[in-house]
Length: 474
Image 1 (spheres, one colour):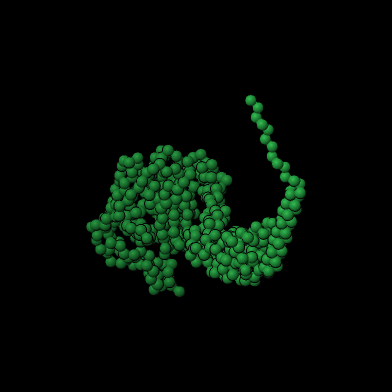
Image 2 (tube, helix red, strand yellow):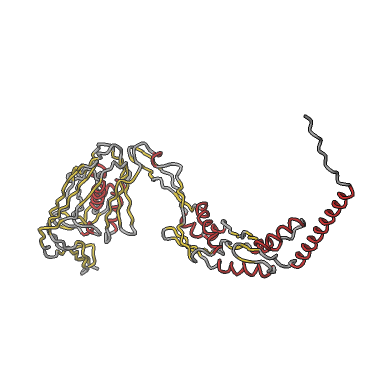
């Protein structure tokens, strides 16, 4: 079966040609008209922003360059009233948003707004203008900030915060540390972290959605020393275990000299594990031949000048440090009477007397590492401090407040002739102290158990004031 061929009538060329030229002419006319409109529009808004333009939420359409600039200059004036209060410990600095150049980039915003729809591409300009006119066009606001400015504004506070790390020193000669310096971490301002924090506020400040005073902590970064205390020695001298302190305000120069000399003989001593430390053995002979001077001591129930007066200030202070360290005390004796020096900023009962060679102060290093004893005398505050270094083993120390009982009044004052003082001069060298029994206890816990439990009781005899009466003629 054959199907008939289909045929379509052919359009005569006379119809297609005119249509083509009509359409071409129409397009040219439309483009020409659009160009005229665009040119007219651009000419009309040559010195203004085209209609429909927003910068963020601010409408700037149909405004002149000066008007746009004025709007954002006024916004920047408000931004300039925002302040950052930056602090680290007791160091505080106040920095304004203006100091950090935070604000709208007025020049860039103005240039961008003025250039919209005014390029050389007619079709692109026409699309932009139509879209802006019908739907509005939102331009993202440009703003500025200068993170480097924060360093300039924190120059003074930076000097206070910055601390250089300290390398450890540890030199041992004849089982004695002759040079010791514990390593210390340093610190400096972490500007990278600070700037990141500041950046989180820039958009809020520009948008006006934050408070006028922003309080921030200045972040710091730790600077580690090249030589740590752990690296400087292999004896376990890595940290402070305890300190002990006493005051000797009112001491005569010779007594101060003796305290410093005796403390220096203890300074730097290493005590090995399981070794018993002896104060008398460490300090040696106490006499004018070993550098000590005459100062007032108690001898035969009287206050007299004797070599080494003040050495018991040293044994007392070391006793306090050992107590606080939780180390076992092998031998300790209290004074026969309450001495005013040992109760300066301290409760009674925390003293330890020595008398070479019979009366000693001893303790044991029962840790698994060496311990180091360091002394420091501060003549400006009349303070003696002992620091014990080693490795902590988790022991916890609690000391009760002393209980004072059986108090007895002091006897009448005693006056003693002193040929070194001008005649009729009276000088008090001892102060009246009541007799008493003073007790306190110490508990040392380790691994959740009572490791040491000891009690210290001192029976003080009453003591009367002692005055020196000058007998020197002329």
